[in-house]
Amino acid sequence: MRLHASGRSIMMRVMTSNAVKTRFAPSPTGKLHLGNLRTALFNVLLARRDGGHFLLRIEDSDLARNDASAFDAIAADLRWLGLDWDEGPGIGAPQDWQQSARAEVYTSAADKLLAADAAYWCFCSQQRLAELRAEQTRQGKAPRYDGCCASLPRREADDRRAAGEPAVLRLRMPQSGMLEFNDLVRGQQTVPADALGDPVIQRADGTAAFLFANALDDGLMGVTHVLRGEDHLSNTPRQQVLLRQLGLTAPAYGHLSLVTDEAGAPLSKRSGSAGIAELHAAGYRPEAVLNYLARLGNAGLDEQLHDLDGLARAFEPSRLARSPARFDRSQLDHWQSLAMAQADMASLLPALTADCLPADRRESLVALVQPNIRFAHELNDWAQRLFADELELSADAVAAIRSRDAEFFGQIDQALLEASGEIDWQVWRPRLEALTGCKGGKLMKPLRFALTGLGHGPALGAVINLMVPETRRTRLQRAAAMAGEADDA
RNA sequence: GCUCCCAUCGUCUAGCGGUUAGGACGCCGCCCUCUCAAGGCGGAAACCGGGGUUCAAGUCCCCGUGGGAGCGCCA
Image (spheres, rainbow, N blue to C red):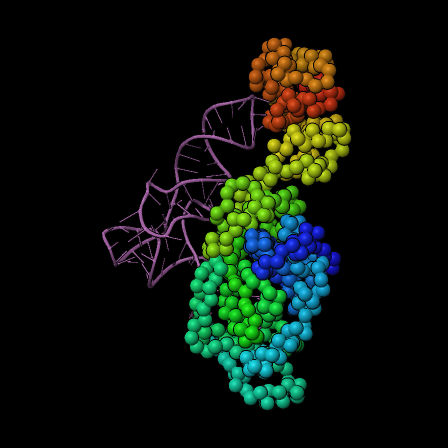
């Protein structure tokens, strides 16, 4: 795996000393979708707002599902959007941010919990657990561990383990009372303690379960604020108990509502249509995606396109929506249009790959059509349209051209021949109107179609100036021929 | 089934007891323009239902309904 933090991130790390630290902790099991990405973004915004750090932690403790290419894809997506991390891949040792490199950390914390009797060995077979769940479900009760092994004497448990009997480690949860915490976005939360069973924190193979590794790392790494999906809401009390037993400070948690697809169904790792890589490939600009996502389920921002710092300034977790938010392509497109309108030349030129135009007109073309396009690849359509030898004419174009006669195009062609260099459309338009006897749209529409094949586009005077004179002639003569045919017919 | 979360225009949302229920995207119309885009102006469009509390409820409470999550040796 190759991961590098940007220079800017390293600078941030050195220059900031604020205690706030947020994190994004994906497991490399699939690609990021917009919901994941929004979670990452919100954590970045919170860190930025308070001048804190953002940590990218790779949660690959479950080795079987680890996937190096997924890992790279996640990093690539985040980097594309400029969501750089101050701590994580590319910075320091893997032990600082990759769970598969931290096995000893989890083992030693597990030992501590065991020693404090905050956790216990459970020898229940998977079969027994399955039967237990089935029975509980049948009785209409919530399926959860019944505490069968909770009171096993430590001595006996140790003997059974020594004898090679497989066992998992479970965390002792309070049996009664209420578990409370204050959620950054949802406010005060209360869960009855008896609704929660004792969760497995270490698997039989000795690896740490998600609940455990995730909370422990937050505590150990000094994470102060965690914004995560609402699917973790009910994990929170367990993680808090866990950290308390270890004497670690739990971060403040805030739970974000889901992002659903356009049909209202939950986004999955398989939702290809809303995948980041797909949006990238489709030509969406990172600023557009960022500005759209920053407002999804979030109010309080103005209608301007902002960079990360601008978005961060107005970020406030308690203002985040608690209800699910639906992905809406037309709103993303709106931000894409704004982003395109404000894009700078340097970021647009690489997208212009068509080679049918003179090198010295590349920038002029971009400047001319930028206000008319939504995606950079459309530059190539315009390049073809204005500079290619061949121009395909639609039925509409043909009809518009045939609405004038051959003389019309011939006159314009001849007149334009006399023009040298830049033509001043303020002068030339009235001149052509007088020459052809056609005013306004009667002149412009057929001319536009003859020259570009389209009925709309940038100001025609500018289009004419940008075009190569020979191409202009070819097209006018072709139009004259077509109009002539119409006369004959 | 149990526990928890959620519910305002099609969509994203403002609203934190008294509002002509506001904005944005999209849509429609007009203006501008050769045209498109942009911009300007205008329009259609919402409080899930039922009970309370209150002089007054989108706003507070309860019950429904609908949606979602969790209840795993997944993360």
